[in-house]
Length: 301
Image 1 (spheres, rainbow, N blue to C red):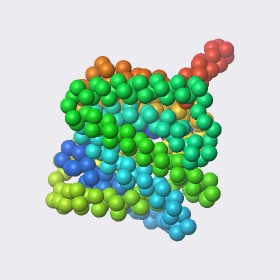
Image 2: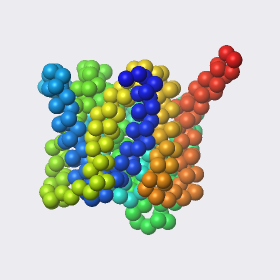
Image 3: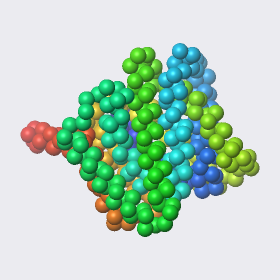
Image 4: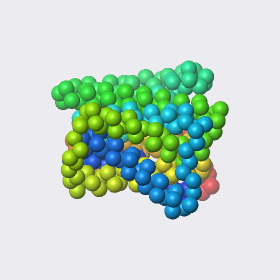
């Protein structure tokens, strides 16, 4: 896969995943949806390794890294799937735009990175303002809106903790990305299945066409292809180019949610989301990168 196509794939996959999660919950509960998604993705990956005559990468010395990666799936993903029951898919994508800020704060004690610069603190305050606007708007929608926002805030924190823990462990003992993904999925399955059993306890599953196709998409495209494409762009593009992705995906996700699922997005939610994305652009230096790119192109012309 060429790097440019991989970049497009990641943008499209990240944009469509929140809506696909909502669709997968059409006839299935959130715990059933996420459990089947990961189990099916692992099964397909194992079949691929067998067909390619490659050994399934699961080494005992790498178990701590698998466990750290698994936290990003369990308990993180059940939080996202449950939140999709209460808030629009576009808002879920906007909430994930906060992850760089949480990463920056957690990286100080976990990785010993320098404290945030004044400009990044200002960006963080702007993002918090946007988050407050979104949260206050959800209060007017009843008790479910704030619950969905709260679940997503916890999810973002758990996801960032998992990512930084993996990075910390990988600094001591590096593991290939495919092995890390496979190990993380395998280690998350017991927790997902236990939650499925204790929270649902029902094995009589009903698959509507909407849930079935969404689940298939999330397993094959969202989990397997999405990971391979993301790993490809990390190797091929600089961090400034990669950091543009969280600015693009919420916009596309909001549009798709509106047209395909009929999700209503209020003006306040759009304003709050715009604040978060604007803050993210300043925090990541994306706008400076775009400006330099435009200047360089105009100079060549």
